[in-house]
Amino acid sequence: MLKQFALLLKKDIKLIIRHNFFLIMLASLLFYSLYINFIYVNEGTKTTATVYVLYESSRESLISKDENIVIVEDEEKLIKALEMDNEGIGIRLDNSGKPSSVLLYHVSKKSDNFKALYGLSKIIDDYDDSEIPISYLQEGDLELKQRATMTSVIIFFEIAAISFLGVASLFFKEKSMGVIKVYGILPASKLLYILSKVVLFLSLEIVFAVLMCLFNIGVEYSLEILPQIILQVLLLSPIMVLLGFLFALVYNNFKQFIFAYTVIIVMVTSPVFLFVTSSLEWTGVYALPTYYAYSALYNTMLKNPYPILYYSLACILVILGLIITNYNLMKREIERG
Image (cartoon, rainbow, N blue to C red; front, side, top):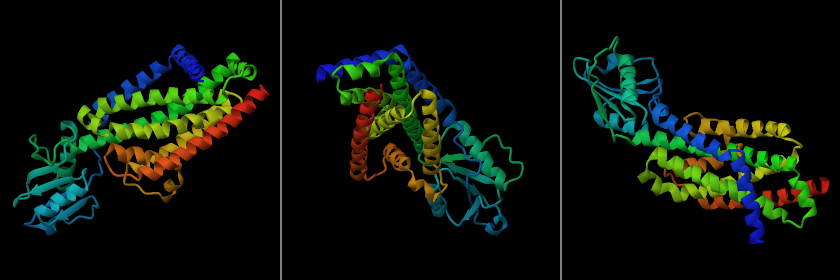
């Protein structure tokens, strides 16, 4: 059995090498890493960030209808407000109404200057001082959080989209080559055929997730969370591979499969990214299974506690159910072929 599994795995590896699947993953790794390091962290500023103003001398004169301006009474409340809102902008004004300092969580020099100018422009007309008095709170924390958030989005999308699409393209290629018909003649194990696909893509996704973490959130932080990240990949990747394989067995050709791919990946995963990583709320997101899958990965990336035991048991049950379903569909496919 082990020899047969090794031969199947070797066949699958040769097939993805022949069709440059490794190059696609490598290109994704490089492209997303460049995006995070050179674009995302430098444009992480919200132009609607809340401005917290401390100006004890004449607080009443700053009361504004602008909901993005909040007047705070003392230094303690200013710091607390910024701790609760890491993307907020804190501005101290002296007795003459001039800014004595702008408090921010550091992201990048370009982004910080932009945020400071935005905050100052909300309360001071035509502020153009070249020396912006920026003071940092826990420098680097916000940037690391942004990197971890975007890295979790990319890893989840890679597992959900690439695994789902990759296993289907591999199956349809083998189907066109007559491999499925051969399985109807030879006493080959259908279960091993399915498991070889799962192991292959699981291995690729683990390598991708590890490299994404190392490249984008640093070695030290990555080493702290990698065991938990790998566990998340071990739970999520087989589900997406088996789902992709299931739809490949249901549809007759790759063109029909693309419709299912569009519905599942775009309509089911996109809302999750939007409502988990932002302050927006929509109760309907809790009905999506992908919400819990992505939330587990997202919270792990940010070192937030998550009910991993119940989530793991649910994933294992789903994996077993998909294996049984795929086995029966594979059997039907061979008999039909």
